[in-house]
Length: 454
Image (cartoon, rainbow, N blue to C red; front, side, top):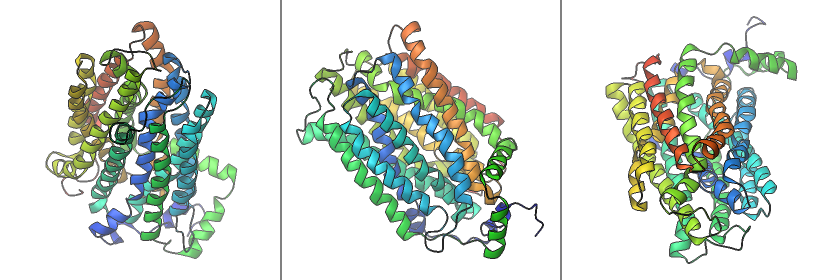
């Protein structure tokens, strides 16, 4: 093999030679995402609530949340690059990263609700999000590693199902503890409630056990030619060589990836706005309070958990329905339709004053979430070099975290100075952005035949 040929040429079995996997095998390789999303959902639904409990001002919450996208920006391309170049006879390529990320995430989930001051909670958010990313990024590449092209949409759909299922349970936990087990959702000022604490403790256990399930039930394909792979890996060894290859890959992304990047940008502005501002927005707009120490505010926080449970539940069901729709109208048009519906749902929350009615727009958000976790990755996997799957999936994360960083930087200013502290308008901005993202699907070229690759 010529010396200038990259290690990625010999990393895995060719896509066309990969055997089709059974439903059980696809499910086993996706169970880890149940735990990952369990932790992610606890973070999304409760961290703003924790920050406000510890004294954060509404216009500063976005800056505190900037930890999450920043860690993704730094961690995912590096983890993708490293996992592409990892092989252990027993642990495989991606599974070592699954395990390390799960162990660190479980620790961060356990410590987060014990935060006594704001800086401690903000620091733990950095640790938690970095750890989740260590596990999550290789899971995206795992589908490309294990499945032939004809099963990849089904593989991402299985991940989306477990993402939805994990998030449903995790989002509902504080509400369940308070309303069915009589565990208090209030505490002294500056103290995190027991209902939130117990939810995070359970999340730590579920995260670790779920990832271990995938690790011990799923094997990975070895490099086709181990000797050649080792030789090529040695050629790219070292920080400088690695930096050069990562930089070169970023500036030579496939065209389809750039097209999807625009869709992702507008989509993730919306989701990040929702995660940051739903609790305060709903507390003020629907429950009529801004007093973070009041029971009404904590009840609003619990109800946001129920709302998030609904959108994640819908996404778990939609995960198996969207591939059928994509087979009829194409993946990019399926994604466009779902984002338009989800964006309209976010905008509609401005006009809803009854808590129960807030569950209706979350159905649309759930469709958008299911599609966002499935369709872009299914389209992308058909446009990537097969042996750089991990790296490019990590780079693709740029177009998730950059809009989140932008949102964290500017939404607080808008809420404070343009909307007089009414954070419900951040959700309106998010909804409009999501609909723009939906329309941007017109420009996406899906290289894989959408009617056969689902």
